[in-house]
Amino acid sequence: MKLIHAIPFAAALMLTSAAAQTTDPAEIRVPTVLVGAAASGTSLELDAVLEPVRQATVTAQTGGNVLALRVAAGDTVRRGQPLLRLDDREVRANTARSDAAVVQAQAELRNVQQVVERNRELKKNGFLSAAALDSAENQVKSAQAALAQAQAARVQATVAQGYAELVAPFDAVVLTTHVQAGDLALPGRALVTVYQPGLLRAVAQVPASRVAQLNAASDVVVLLPDGQRLVPTDRDMQPTADPVSQTVEWRLPLPASAAGLRPGLMVRVQARTLLPAAGTGTADRLSLPTRAILHRGELTAVYVAAANGFILRAVRTGPTGGDTVDVLTGLRAGERVALDPVRAGLPGAIAQ
Image 1 (cartoon, rainbow, N blue to C red):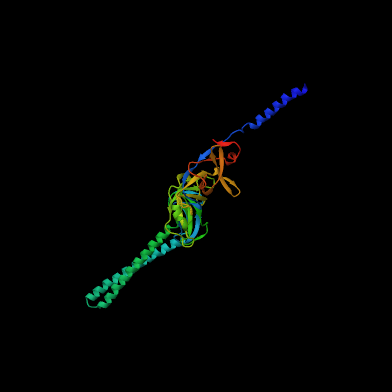
Image 2 (cartoon, helix red, strand yellow; image 1 turned 30 degrees about the vertical axis):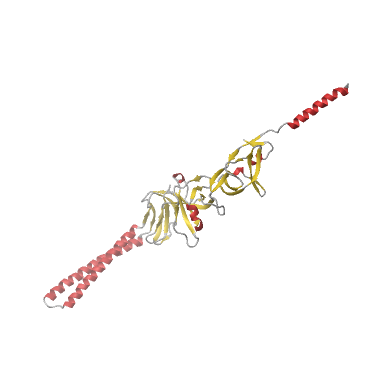
């Protein structure tokens, strides 16, 4: 009796095991993306520095020691506000000497003019030769020239006296000071540099061989150290190259949102060009999100959606532009590719 009851139990166990083995694995649905055409091009990144669009360096127009430096870097100044004062004692002394020279020249001119008047009377009465009169008249001309020279020197001395107090040329922020109180400021020496806030540009030095490529750029962004991306309001490639470095200055004015940034900040310029990459010979390429690409050693591949799942297919990729990558060979427009290549390789994976 025990044997008879054991046979049905064993048969039931075998049937249950067979049923478990024939059950299909759970389906894994993987999101896909449609392969589409993308404009051919390359990406290029350059180092750049922020510079003010409007900047001025106040220089010494006359010599003298710096008596007082009234501003520091970062100060906001108004147009006409004093920045520093130079010792003008020597300048005032020159002005006084110029005034005295003018008075002396005026007196000499009056003297020779009186001599000429007397000589004319003497010649009229026959007591003086014509040559002597001509000599006296020439002395008048010389005295007139001497007076004009003295008057010009006085004007120059007066103007120089006005350079003792140096002021801001426009509403600005002080970028840097080049002197301290007590320093000797010779004519032409830089004293204070100011810039107009709110107007900044990124300036990059572009290799001359890349100028044409960047002039054709479709997208240009300036990347700040904190990750912020700014789109320039204009692009200004300078017309000439530096003869030594063979680079061309590229100026990219920034929008008003960059007003709080400081000049001198190092940034990156990212440009996407529409020029075909060397050796492709094509005007268009296919584009995919970078996360759809599978890298296994030397293999670069994608999972292409098929009727019963996915097929692993090798591809050759080109330049990467942000979150997308160009696919040069291995795919056709209109095919669907798995966005998660790891899950697409699992048994039971199908396109979502």
